[in-house]
Image (tube, rainbow, N blue to C red; front, top):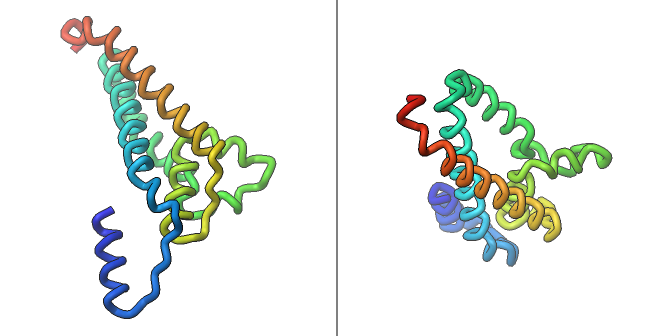
Length: 143
């Protein structure tokens, strides 16, 4: 985010006209959601890794697959309409599209999609905390 701000300042000083939408105000919420999703998945994986040691190796492939499943280098509008519901099950899809809409002005923002994404993030975080609480008692035995 700091790198993005640096580029915005640089190009503004060079004379480029930069327009942000009103969605810039939602960026702190997007950052909190990304942090919560990362924390939830991190807790889930660390809890499961104590029992299933090979999960560590699968995570590298899983993260790459997740990156390609998230519309980062392609917009959500390029996904066929009948397959978009699958893409919207990814909690990062609405976050990336909202960032794209807020900062570049070329994305889609839908409150129901963002609410679904936030709800899925909450479920993942709560599941991670619950699982960690259950597995925490036996960490020393399995490690």
